[in-house]
Image 1 (cartoon, rainbow, N blue to C red):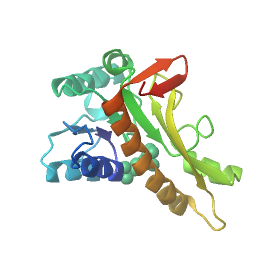
Image 2 (cartoon, rainbow, N blue to C red):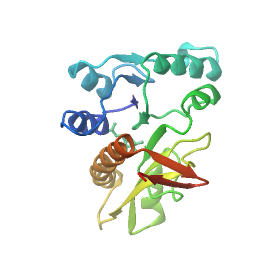
Image 3 (cartoon, helix red, strand yellow):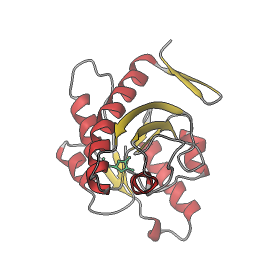
Image 4 (cartoon, protein in one colour):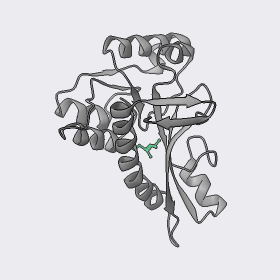
Length: 196
Ligand code: GRF
């Protein structure tokens, strides 16, 4: 898994992986910065962690290459980016394209980008939500695996709305990853089908 923040979605997956029959386990957790809650949660669970900071590399291409190499070493079947705030590059996608999952706190294609919760509030939508996608080279543009709607309540601010969306994200990510690893998936154009 790749994280940049508190790692509550990672924690939900760790908890799910402990259930017999879930069908997956987290083999490693990578971060793009030091001191993330996500890495701390992984360490507490005895899972290997690594950090690749963009500023430690001369350019984005060499950062991407190092991150790809770190991930390859752990031989994952799937990579889940949950709150990972960097776009991966060509090397990463040539290795993991089609099996890199990203979760986004809005109903794509509405409100892509880093400020989706703020943007949805500013637009005045009454319903927003979360999208779990197969990441591609664009910003939140890949084929959609699953979505869940979340109401915007009177008086919501960015934090309260994001927290409500994250409750949905945790269960949608867990459900989607579980179904993918147990049943497989296929992609035709933009349409993804999980299971046969
Ligand atoms: C999620 O809303 C994710 O979609 C967004 O950052 C949040 C991550 O939360 N990009 P956490 O670090 O898993 O608690």
